[in-house]
Image (cartoon, rainbow, N blue to C red; front, top):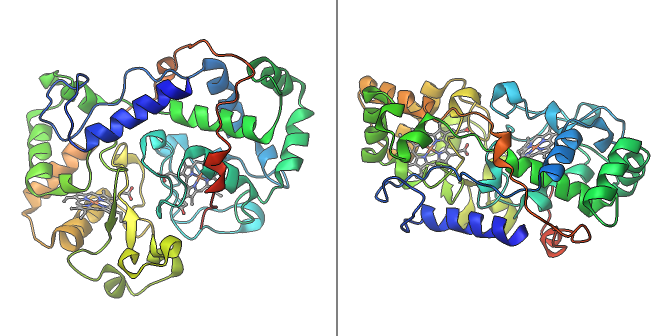
Length: 344
Ligand code: HEC
Ligand code: HEC
């Protein structure tokens, strides 16, 4: 399973870089449809879905992943800042979990190299779950239903790595194909003429230079404020605003962020790492000003917003197809934990 998944992810990255593909209806398009088969183990997906809403991940049994990643809000947090254990607030706005398995790195700063690294770190983060892994393992082991599921799916039962693997596998299953994917696969009637024009504007104005590939983003780092000083103009410059600089300490990484995916973006307000843009229209205005350094007629912006709405998709649990797997094999490579970093 791991190798198939890896191939799928690697293919996504290669496509984002412009390589040809048998997947796409039109090989010339810079955007790529979501994969049709994920090859995930359905039992692990189901187990992960239970853990995703399980408050026992937190030290005082009050917080679950779903506390901050709201499925009725595109998998993101409607609050500009998330609230973790003991009322601790996050330094940044929570992005969507949907399609996050297709990002080249996780988190705004890209500090987590994989979903596994992120989940391992976040459970111990004192501002999120505030747990010790050993305590979580004990609590989950005491649950008869969950411990039977773990024993069936993993040779060694409830362990940290198996909990991480189940949650990461479930998260990878949260892909959301949309009308726009049907369009990319050749169904020209899946989007309206106006939406197609919006897509043309998205490309011709240059949004596509940064928001591209299978996730319409999520495959590169870029500075926020290429054509103007966003942070000076908005009167804040917190440690979280430093972006990748906080990870690398390199001056050239100041204010550099992972370009976010625009899938389901119509549902995930407020926008940006600082949650400062309340509407999609406001976010698109900021992008024109600070990333492209140009003005555009309101009609063109409205068309782009229309296009962005075609990226609203639906979760497809059926994509998790059964693949035979030896129960003793734990798909989590321990190496992936070494780079684990917690949420800011
Ligand atoms: C207290 C609120 C909170 C909880 C609980 C929480 N998250 Fe998050 N999540 C966030 C915030 C805030 C960020 C952004 C942090 C950053 O980028 O520094 C984030 C980022 C992420 C990302 C990265 C997405 C991207 O595009 O980079 C993923 C994936 C994710 N969370 C999944 C999960 C999972 C799985 C759980 C449960 C194990 C979880 N989260 C629990 C608030 C939360
Ligand atoms: C030079 C690269 C670049 C270009 C060009 C660019 N963007 Fe962005 N975009 C980014 C980055 C980086 C962010 C994240 C900024 C932050 O929050 O720190 C972002 C964020 C966004 C967001 C907010 C997403 C969210 O979940 O918070 C939207 C919407 C968006 N861009 C749309 C567009 C549109 C539409 C265009 C063209 C008009 C565009 N972008 C052009 C790099 C770019």
